[in-house]
Every structure is written in C-alpha cells, then in structure tokens.
Image 1: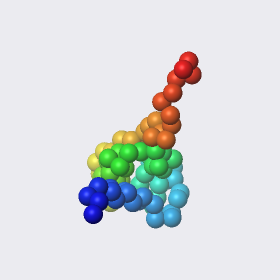
Image 2: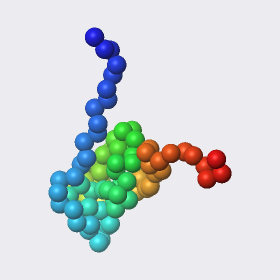
Image 3: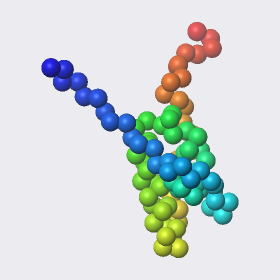
Length: 88
C-alpha cells in the first residue's frame, strides 16, 4: 500500500454570485477582492486558506456594520511558471 499523502485541494469560496460591490471592492458572493478571484488558482493551498480566513473576517465585519476589512491578499507568481531566466 502506498503511504504517500495526497493533500485535499482547498475549495473555492465562489457561490456563483460574481459581482463586485463598488462601495468596498469585494465580491458580493464570496467576499474576495478582484485580485483574490483572479489569482485563486495561482495561490498555494496555504495562501488559499489565508484568503478564506480574510473572506470570513470581511463577511463578519460587513454583517456587524463596523470594523476594518481584512486587506487584499494581492497577486502572486504562478506556481506553474518556470523559474528559468531569459539569459539561460
């Protein structure tokens, strides 16, 4: 039996309500920023879990009507991109 561990992928928070709220710049469905939506597939599993925590924090702040929203996770270099330099 192979004892190799296969990690479970992090499930996207998308609920198919893809509309940015102009007041706060967050998706009305999942509470991600545009960058977080665009870069979701490039984030590592750890980064995806961080985005999920930020989404939950934002959801709670907006429901309470007070507090500071978690900052944008931002962009990352794709895991799929080769690290070869142009001079190589």
